[in-house]
Structure formats: structure tokens, C-alpha cells
Length: 426
Image 1 (cartoon, rainbow, N blue to C red):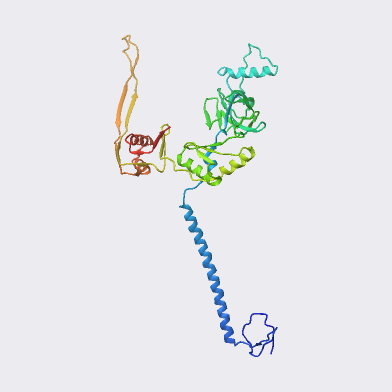
Image 2: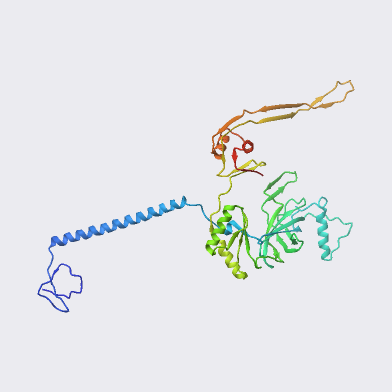
């Protein structure tokens, strides 16, 4: 018989009633029958299989919840935008610069000096600055130079020494600026002050070639290009951002609902009275007087999420290209539209009047005009109340109408008061 201390969990043991040791209890172990051991092993395997099955069900349930949560997110509330994407800070703006310059190094594709005399004049003025005087009676035939206009956008807070991109465009009759080099050209602002100096190699995105017979080929535009980092800033534009006082946030798209929500979001984050709407497009915000604190404070405000208001129902029509852009909220009341097109064709076929041989008459050309008017069969459209413009577009496309017909229908619906949207023609 073996004995052991009762320091472990007692399993399959029997404790005699006469044992009463104060510190240690010795028990007598009896081996279990084989049938009982087999039954307990089977129960252990069943419990293990049950635990594995429960684990698999939990994993499957977690996956279903994740998919269900994703679906809820897709049909949830409208996506919120950052305030920095909806507004701009008053006084923080881009300034346009413009200048005049010369592009040299062209492979015979420059301005023809007889038709663009300002190119020769500009080159002579530049040479005089280097002490080179061109005789007055000289008429140099330049083929490798072109007069250009140089433009650039000066970003806010640009400091002297920084570089910006410039755009170069020919103002003469140069065929291409490929391979050209822009000479030093000052860029001025609206106040007449020079804010940057541009110079560098012109990068052209197009190509143009012409043969001696006059045949030519052109891909994209080759008489304008860009110079990346081609201008160096020489003067900074004064900004009122560092001065004291409240800041004003201007909405990119004025809307009373969006302005109200921006004010509510800022006041919820920084306390009541921090922001105040001036109108439907401007919000005044109190700011700390210290410039460094104002920068970090404004950065935090611009990261606040705001759900903008619904855009107005609008239809934009480009009458030149026939492009029609229709908003999703555009609706039409009950209306019936009949539209047909009239086509007028005028053809000229001159006739020659030849007199007899001995009549002493003269040969004359007699004009002969043929005018034909044709009207295509009109189509009748009938729409119920509240129908979307998508239905109208499909109906017009099914009968093979042109975009110009759709534009005419939209204008007629607007005049009749059936189109409940702003019709913008550009």
C-alpha cells in the first residue's frame, strides 16, 4: 500500500474515517476498473471534440458579425469630410504671376522674325545688356528663338529661395518649343512687383513634324510646356495669418446647412462661442494670439469631421460639346414633351453659260441654288410626376436622339416649370 500527502486534488481516492493527522493526511489509493477507465477516456475525447466545435462556431460567428458590420457601414450615414476639405482660410490664397521671356536653342522651329518682329527686338535688347550692339540696318533671321509668355502660381507662405513650377507658351509663330531653353525672365504680380525669376529647360508633352511638301503631323500641343521647379521665389507675399484677431473659414461651396454643421462641430470640440457663422459661406473662429499656437490650433480644427449638407439639384449643360451632367436629386413633375428637328440644306451648283461661237458673247457663270427643308418625325414623351431625369435620358436615348435634342428638352422643361433643378448652361 502506498501513501502520499494530500497536496493535490484528490481523484479516485477514499479517506478512512479514523485518520485525523493535524498536518498531513495519508490516503489509500485503489486502482480503478478497466471499464471505468475506458468510459472516462471516451468522455474526455467527447469533451475535447465539443470544445473544438464550439471554437469553430465562435470563429464563424465572428466572421458573420464582421461582414454584417461592414454591410451596416455601407448603408450607414453619409461619409463625413474634414473641415480642411470643405473650407479655406481667408487671406491664405494663391497668387498668379506672369512674365515675358525668350526661349532659345530651338532646332529651326522658332519664330519667323518677319512675322514676329518683337522676338528680334527682345533679343537685341537682351544683347545690349551684355554690351553687344546690333547695327540698326541689320535684320537677323532668327530660327532658333521664340517669344513666350511665362506664368506661375505663387502658393501661400512661399519664402525666398523656394522653387515653383512655371508654364511657358509661345506668342509668336514658333512651330514647337521642344528642346528649348528659357532665358532669365522676371515674374511679376498684379501689383507690378517681381516675386520670382524663371529659367530652365522646357519640357514638352506634344510632338509636331512637317515635311517639305507641306504634310504635317501633330500629337497634343507642342508650342507650350512646363519647367518643373523652374522659378525661384525672390519675395514673399505678406499674409495676415500671423496677426491677431479671429480667423474666417470660407466654405468652398456656400451652403447654410454645411455652415451650421461646421459651427456645431467646432463648438462641440472647443466650447460654445468658439465659432460663429457670419453667413452661408463664412464662419468666424476665435483663435489664440500666439502664431505658433494658432498654427497647431487651426490644424486640429481642420481635422474635425463634418457631414456636409446635401448638394442642390442641378443640371449642367455644355452647349458647345453637348455634355449634360445631371445630379442624382433632380426630379421632374408630370409633363409631356413633343420634340422634332428641322434640317435645312442649301447646295450651290454653279452653271456655265457658253455663248455661240460667232455671237460675240462672253462666257459667264450662273449661280444655281437648291434649298431643301426636311423635318424628322417628332417623338412624344410623357412622364409621370416625380420621375427622375435618369428615366428621361433613357427615353431620349432609346429613340436615338442627339445630345442637342436632350439639351432642348431640358430647357423646355425648365421653362414650363416641370424641371425642379437649377439649369446651368456653360
